[in-house]
Length: 71
Image 1 (cartoon, rainbow, N blue to C red):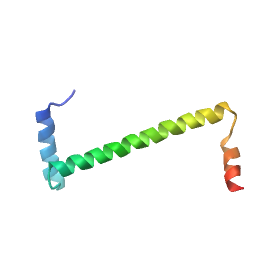
Image 2 (cartoon, rainbow, N blue to C red):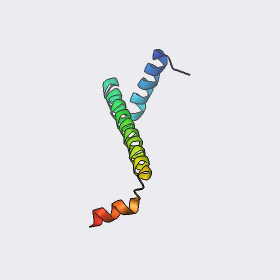
Image 3 (cartoon, rainbow, N blue to C red):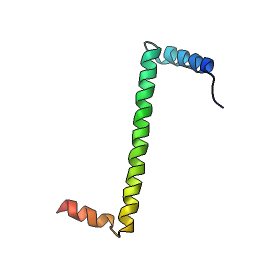
């Protein structure tokens, strides 16, 4: 269930105190950076899967690609 703004602010204050963040801005900035990295990682894996599927459809095997890089 979604938390209310009041509950979120309370949680943030507790985290700030417990983990030694300087202030709310520092905590939120770090949380946003971490979320962006997480989403970029997910995006990378989604793109990788599309490439894998495309290569498989064309009959390209990983061994073929590795041989080309080793040459």
